Length: 132
Image 1: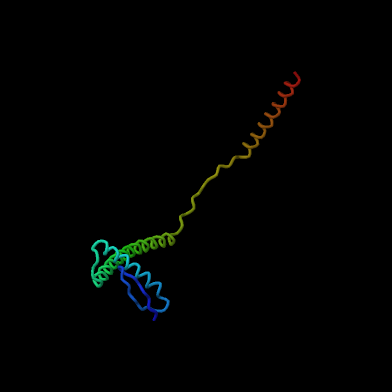
Image 2: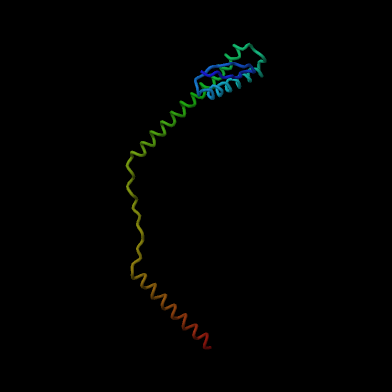
């Protein structure tokens, strides 16, 4: 088992851990050291066992709060997943009928005829304007 040197509250400790776990030990030690630093700032120098106990309790309190938030989030997620599953299992609504107006051929024919007459009149007006 490798031995790793960690610092907590300005004090060094030699700790054994499993091979490859050194990084996790260092991360945990940094969290504990941060809490110890808060204690040292607020209370001043305190005996090592008490400092470690208090820092550990502060971390445990934060962990308990995070676990409670996690449970709440998991509960909300479960409710949303149930709602999503309910929506997925609900049959799709009947398609809505949309009616599109159809223009009868007589109307389009009449409009085409009017357009042709208008063009013819415009041509005749233009001829008279050019001639006169």
